[in-house]
Amino acid sequence: MQDIQDVYDERGREIRSHGSALFPAAQYSANLSERSIAWHWHDEFEVGYVTQGCVHLDVGSQHVELRAGEGFFINLGVLHAFSAVPGSP
Image (cartoon, rainbow, N blue to C red; front, side, top):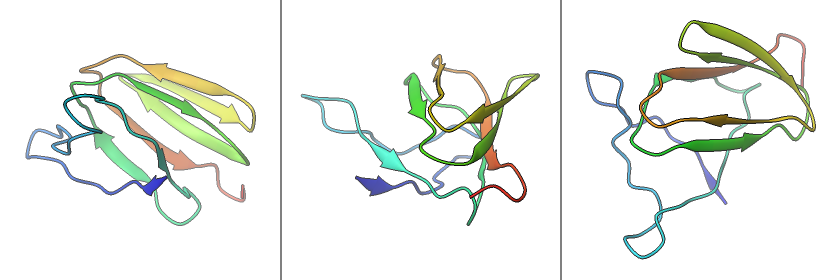
């Protein structure tokens, strides 16, 4: 599993390739208590799962707080960002 890295263009579009042409999917981990993930969007949908702590997920104009054991789906082309809830592991 790769650590997620921020690679965005001037419009906030993620410009990293995920997987390969034969299998266009990838798995990443992010420790949000160490850093947040800035506002961005991409041409792929995103599925995620919180393994511990609490996460702030901003999607468009909506704000959601997710806890360990909860997941999310973000459609392609939708602006979103992630950060840890303060004091959460």
